[in-house]
Amino acid sequence: MLEALLRQRRIEARWQDTAAEAGHASKAFRAGKLKSQPVKNLIVSLAKIK
Image (cartoon, rainbow, N blue to C red; front, side, top):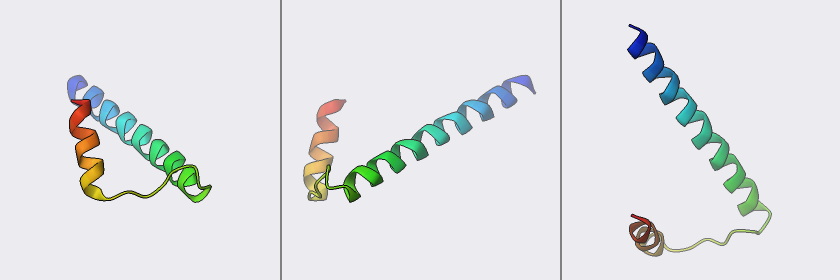
């Protein structure tokens, strides 16, 4: 039971971090700090990170 609770807290914390990052990225995009790009380029960039 404790393990399940800790797992759920980690999942929720990860979700909150992801939501916060998405909010920052959205604000940066609207402010013109980020440019749109084709999905293919994004996938290639993400593949290089691994």
